[in-house]
Image 1: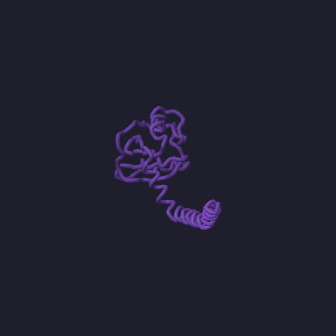
Image 2: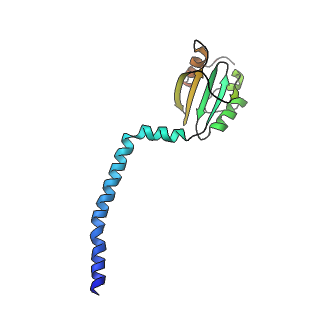
Image 3: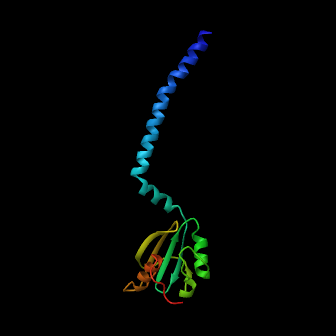
Length: 139
């Protein structure tokens, strides 16, 4: 009978310190996540698939879990997350992005990078403006 009491007493004496250790670990995890949120976001983003669409001298790369579907919609002229009819602008699927980065943005839960291989970056600048809600070219 004594062993039962001793065993019960031992278990309850560990509950307090165990709770404190778990609470400290939870607080440290929250602080670390807050301090390194940008790095965690970048790490998670690097796991997401990408696809690229070419229009004239520019390329638009979409990075998201829905990337393949997004690019397919963009090259078919269907409604897509950008609100732009890329098919009317001559969008075609391309295997890789090319040119200098014109802009990068997060748009509707996707990371979008626009690059332009022309000397004056004019096409890339227009697409960046369009994606930021600027004027669309005439249909």
